[in-house]
Length: 286
Image 1 (cartoon, rainbow, N blue to C red):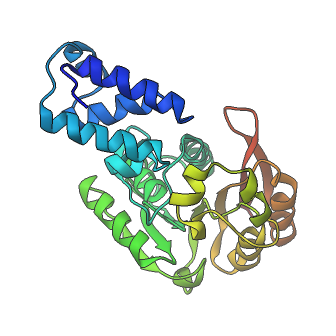
Image 2 (image 1 turned 45 degrees about the horizontal axis):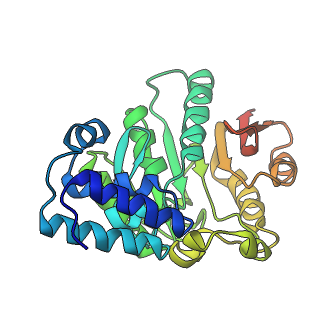
C-alpha cells in the first residue's frame, strides 16, 4: 500500500485500527517510534514524505497491533513515572495506576522515616523493574533490592536499571524467599492478582500477549497477599511500610490479611485516580 506522506499513512492506520476495534491513538505512537520523535515533532512533520522503507515498517506494526499485539511490545518501550522502560513479553506492561503506588509510598516514607534516610527497600515481583528503579531514582539514599520468580523478567529489569543508571540488587526467588535473614524498612509489591475465572472478561490483547504468571493468582486472586502477610512479620523492622497494588474488589480481604499479621499497624485501603480501591498500605510503628 503506497503512502506518500506521514499524514496519509496515519489516516489509513487510524481507519484500519478503528475497524479492528483497537485504539486509533496507537497509530500515532507507532509512527513516533519509527520516526524517533515525540508528539510535537510528529505534528510538525505531518506533511513530509514518508520513505518506502518507513511506510512498509509502519504497515507491518499497524497490522501486528490490529491482530492484538500491544503497542508497547511492538515498540519495546513504555513510559513510567517520566522515564522510558524497555518491555517485552517476559514482563507485564507497567500501568499508570502503579505510579500512584509509588507516590503513595514516597509520601508515607517521608512521614514515617524522614527524607534522605538510609532505608532497606524491597520490590517483590519486580517484572520490568518499574517500581524498584523508580523508587531508587526518587529516594536515592535507599538500598533497593528487586526480586522475581522469572529469570527473563530479572534480565529485562537489569537492562532497565543499567539504562536508567539505577544501582539495584536483583535476586531470583519466590515472594520473600530471597529476602530472608535481613530486616526491611519498606516492602512494595504489585503481585499477580486476577482470579482465573475473570479471564473471560479480559481483553485478548492482554490475555494473548502478557505473561499469565504476572496476571493470575489462585484463591480468587488473593493467594499471594495471604502469603505475603504471613511471611512479612519475620523480615520487617519495628517501624516499616508495606504497600501493595490490588484488584479493585480485594481491598477488605487484603487489608484483613495484614491486620491479622500486624494487629497494631495502621492499615489503609486507598483509591486510584478512577476512584477504585487499588492499594493497601500497612504502616508499622511498634
